[in-house]
Image 1 (cartoon, rainbow, N blue to C red):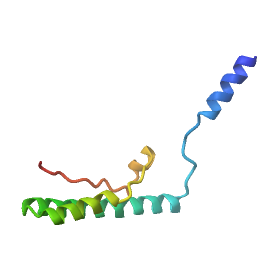
Image 2 (tube, rainbow, N blue to C red; image 1 turned 180 degrees about the vertical axis):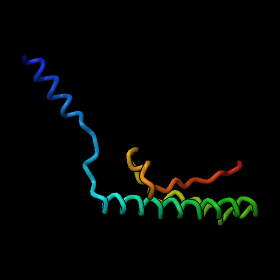
Image 3 (cartoon, helix red, strand yellow; image 1 turned 45 degrees about the horizontal axis):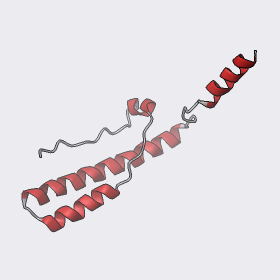
Image 4 (tube, helix red, strand yellow; image 1 turned 135 degrees about the vertical axis):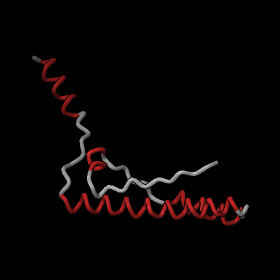
Length: 93
C-alpha cells in the first residue's frame, strides 16, 4: 500500500500540463506570437538585403534586432488553433 501511494504521489507531482486558459488568454498569446513572428520576417528580409548588398553594418544591426525578438513557447494544443500563425521564411545560404 505504501508503494502505491508513493507512486501515485510522484505521478501526480509530474503533471506539467498547462493551466486551462480562457479564450481571451489564448487570443492574447497567439496575437503576441504573431506580432513577434511578423517582426522576425521583416528582420529576415532586411538581413537578406544586407547580405545581397554586402552591407556589414546593416547586417550586424538587423541580426542583433532579430536576436532580440522574444520567442514564445506555444503549447502543441494551441498550434492547431486557427488563429495560430506559422511564420517562417526560406533563406538560401
